Image 1 (cartoon, rainbow, N blue to C red):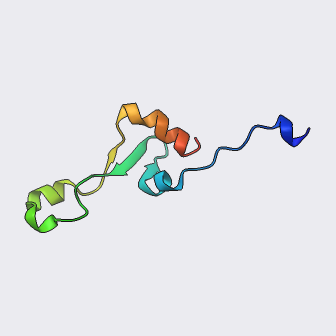
Image 2 (image 1 turned 45 degrees about the vertical axis):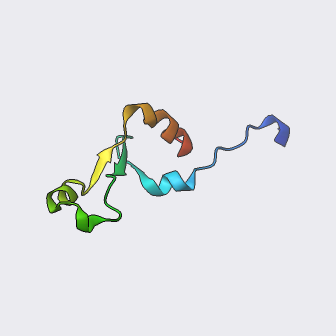
Image 3 (image 1 turned 60 degrees about the vertical axis):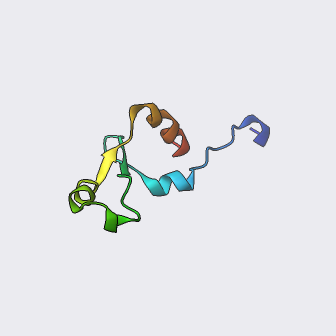
Length: 70
């Protein structure tokens, strides 16, 4: 088998890998938006609600899994 016969490997998109986590069942989780800056003008109730992670929207899952090499 020569190098010409083999398909190239898919590389992991490192920017996506840093932002998205894959659960044990294969679901994608991401951080909630709006928690980076200007927190002093946002209500405390809002910043508490934005803690943690949320599931990636269904239309984006296929594209993100391809970027992650899955």
